[in-house]
Amino acid sequence: MKFLRAIKSGHVFQLGQHEKHLLLETIKLYPLVPATHHRLSKGGEVPQADENQRLLEDALAEQRQENRRLVLLMLDEPQRFRETKSGFELKLTPAQVEWLLQVLNDVRVGSWLMLGEPESGEEPKITKQNARHLLALELCGLFQSVLLAALGMNESSKWLGD
Image (cartoon, rainbow, N blue to C red; front, top):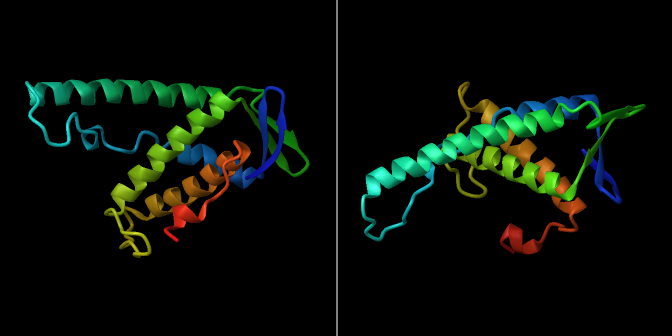
């Protein structure tokens, strides 16, 4: 995936046939972070904590299923991907770029959780069950970096811990 240009209505990206397939299959993993991962409180006493936590989880699950449906519908719109000699051009508004970043981040974090939350530089233990999550983790990072570059956010040495 490559950022081609900014246009009045947003951004244009170039994807090969295989990249388009990988992007769509990766997005289909959404939502991947379990609703139980989000906590109502990180420590303090909360009245009716269990009931309120359950309500939060239910609301998140419902919202995320609707987000999944809508993002897949958006990417399935006939004008979304324009076929070119080298693959496809993908046009997104700034709001759609932000939305796609959120979806990809959920898949990336969820994949990291499925891999056992490996520390930076640590090789996760790969099994038949979690191999696709390693691929999803890496693909999300790639797609996110291109989308962020389109928004003018380049990689920072601070992100690398330097």
